[in-house]
Every structure is written in structure tokens, then in C-alpha cells.
Image 1 (cartoon, rainbow, N blue to C red):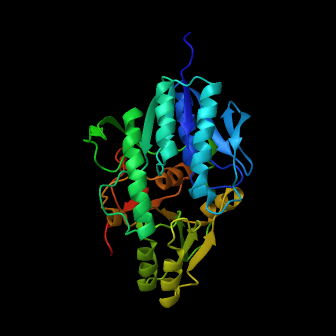
Image 2: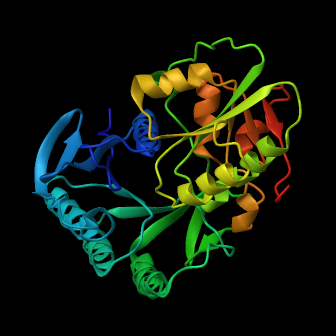
Image 3: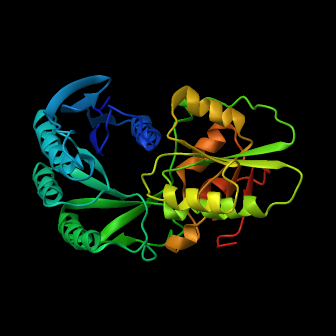
Amino acid sequence: MSEKKKLLYIVRYPIYEDFNLRGKFDGQLAAFRNLGMDVYHLVFDREYFYLEHDGEREIVGKATTRLPMYFHTKAYYDMHRAVLKAAKIVRFDYVYWRGAPAWRSSYKTAQELCAMGTKILYEIPTYVKSGEKPMSILRKAFSVYSNHYKSRMMEFVELMVLIFTGDTTMSTLYGKPVAVIDNGVDVSVIPLRKPEQHDGEIHILALASMSYWHGYDRLIRSVSQYTGEQKIIIHMVGGNDGGMLPEWKQPAEDLGVQERVIFHGKMYGDDLAWMFDLCDVGTNALAQYRKNLSATSELKVREYTARGLPFLCSVEDPALNHTDDPFWLKVANDES
């Protein structure tokens, strides 16, 4: 039997707190193992970066998480140093690099990995040609800096990986071949819901990082205009990573539906399982048009389905194409 190819998965993965992308990362790691890879990945706590393999961890660098804005800035430099330290411990055949803002250290890390003979696969989680939210001057300046180093590091990339956004015809990006994949979850670790009964009420789960393209303002307006006999309650579950919570709390108050739009914050584990039991239907992003998208591959849809929760969607999704079962309802991808 030939020896398994060794793969290093590069992503910011904090283990000192729960976060909404943990399921995605763990699912991708499980998928690589199912493909027969010998999988390594980096994680970090409040003190160190570790190289994790088969449940064992080895320190490969320091993490100074108490610095202001660490997670969005210096964490990348520390992670890249940890990558190169790990590459001196283990000879990796492949690196799967989940796309993130690019820094000079991103370019240097890619250069050194390539010199070691490692093939780099680079994922862009959502490839959007236009329609991004307007940025501040500071963010625009960083975007120019980041795009410069991302373009330079592409010299060392073997394959670009794009999550499905409707365009399956793109064959190259940055001059590199493209593979289009779907999002996925590890269903073996997701419990089925145990639905609660509550006559006269419909509970809707809006689970997200609360970004403008989730479009939950549409849902809030709809609840305010609803005149039917059911009591409709929206459960907003997630932090303010996307920055939209204040902009959604205010219209809920202005429209007089604050008692029917409940903001729970982040929920995990048993608390999140209870929320899935309580709710009758989930919703995925309802404003992909704000990013000029008419198709997507959302992680939420996969988790809703794995747990057994019907859901609303507004765009095409490859996971829905194989079935006519009345498990999901497609609504308009506009401001209605």
C-alpha cells in the first residue's frame, strides 16, 4: 500500500472560543480524510499555535491574542510563521489554503512552500466579481494592499478552488486552473432535531453572522405586514460579525415587532440544538442580489437539511437540484 499524501489545511482556527465556521472547517477536514489524505491543520489558543494531527497537538508558534484586533491583523503573520515551522517538521505534499486577506507574509509563505516542493491549492470561499458593500477609505487602502500580495502569491499556486456561485464555466483565475466545489457539512456529528409543538405560532430561525447580504430586514418587514392568524416569531441567532445587528434591531423597533424578532446572540451546542427543536423553519441568506449573485452554496442549507429543518432560500443551490421534495421554499431574490 502506498503511503498517504500529507496535506496541511491553512485557516485561522481558534480553539479558545466557539465560532460559526467551525462546522465548515471540520467538515472540510473530514472530507480530505475521506479522500485518503493524511491531514494536518493549525489551531491556536490564547498562547500558542499548534500543529494538530490525529488528535495530537505540537506547539509551532506563539499567539498573542490579547493584542487589540489581533484576530484580524497579526494573527495572520503568526499563523504564517507557524505554517513554515510545521513545514520543517513534516514534508507536506499539498497545502489547502482557505482564502483570506493577503499580506506580505502570505506571499513569502507561499514562495517558501513552493520551494519545498509543496503544491498549493487556494480556495476563494465566495468569488464575487462586483456588488460588494461600499468600503471605508481605510478598508479600500487595505484592499489594494491585499490584492497586490494575493496576485503575487498566485505565482506559486497550483489550483484555484471556488465555492459554487452559479458560474461553473470559469476555467482559469489568476491564470491558474479552477475547480468548483460545493459547501458541505459532516452529517455524522450533527444531531437530528426533535420538533416542538406550538399551535398558532410559527418560529423562524435566522442563523448567520449577520451580514448585509443575509437580508433579514426583508423578513422583519414581512412580519410587520403579515395579517394572518398565525403568530410569526423570528429568532435571530448569531453575533455581529457582519455588522448588521444594529441596522436590524432598529427597524424591528420602528415597525413595532420587537417582541416577534428576538435577538439571541451566538448559540452553540445544546443551546443551538434546542433552538433547532423550537423552530419550524429556517432561512438562508435572502439578499444575495446585494452581491450580484443568483446562485450560491450556503453552509446553513446543509446544516438545516442535516438537522431536518425545512427552510427558505432565494437563489439556486446545487444541493437542491436533485429533489422535488417540499422541504424548501424558494422566494424572490429582490427587495420584496
